[in-house]
Length: 312
Image (tube, rainbow, N blue to C red; front, side):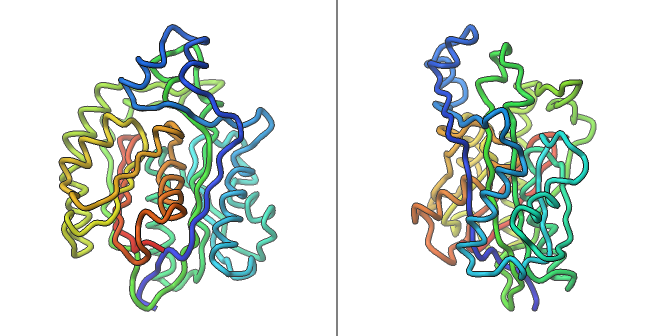
């Protein structure tokens, strides 16, 4: 095999929905202020007893069911998350146990909002190297647990959920070369620190970096995949903020692509946002099977990672 491809997708969101009017009753804000500033209308919040691995396993189970593979076929589980509280067993091992997988390698990756695209590249590289043949790649976050619900600048953003992909070996690569990196000296612009950990960010710094520095990198991702932005059928950026997603997509020049805007109903779900939004696009049939889709994660550490995939 010379590459890998995404065979199937799945996603999960908690039942509780928190609307902007609900938030306006908690902090000094309004539904219109939130909508105009970040584009978010609702977000899903996990139950107090609902864990990161529980949400991850729910999304992964759907992806596995859609793939037609048996649990015993999976030999690698990667979970991208920055909100797991427990260190061991890690989230990947807990997902493997919940799904009854045989003897997979299990790893968690913490690259915050760019976690899923880093994990997808890692799975692709591992399969290309012959160290695995079928992987579950999951982004899952309980961001609400790291949210300061008295801080209106951040609590309006966050949501919980999970998205998952089954990635398998393929004769023709369906996952393009990754372009990834970071800006370490600016890493403090997005933080989840302290005891208990709390999410904070320098919003204007992140906005300027994302809208000015990321479009050329996204175009490089397309070039590495051998296509132009005009060839894209879909663009799934990290669902951070509609005021970031729309200008980045416009500057990219993907004029024929469906632009994922799941942030409107899901909020910022960090590492879960790219697979969650992609899974919904595929479920609704908005992107044809086999069509090229740009995935691009960015955020904490001021890290980024992107690749073009063929839609399952």
